[in-house]
Picture 1 (cartoon, helix red, strand yellow):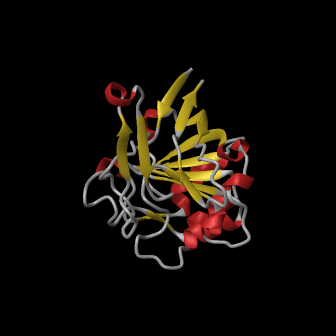
Picture 2 (picture 1 turned 135 degrees about the horizontal axis):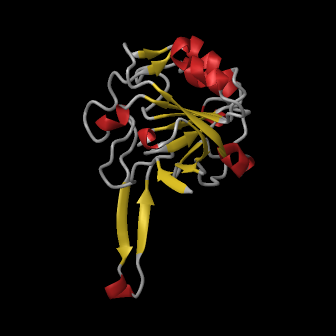
Length: 211
């Protein structure tokens, strides 16, 4: 069994979605001085590799404290989109996922994580068409993961792909990394968020477990 880390590290000065408060990771206690170490974390719920659930956009949707661990673990498959031509992901790009049996999480590998920690990361990344989002929503998944900031453009106000996926009960995992280290399918994907009361999103330690 091999466990593959798919997460970006949380640190002061890390990239954040435009307009979000920057994280602050501050050591408050030190072993030599206090006998133990402790760190203060201040960060948005959508910082770094994180899970969004429907409460992000819908008032009556279940929040993180209502959702159990089973919502965030299951069988995964990777759609290799690294040769994608153009700025959008359409249904035809995702068609092979329909043949994967027992699929819980579709992970969309665009290779965009190579731009992490650069000015380009939050600009012109590949996004889902509404047709592609509806296709994914029809696969009976628990969630969709991306190595990009969002399934929608950074300047989108109505977030159509988010809404389609959320409306069909899917979680969205954003800012994944290292999807190229996973097998194409038949691995376990885990993206457990913090159990935040009334939470709509949370950073997570996303991993793939190849059996």
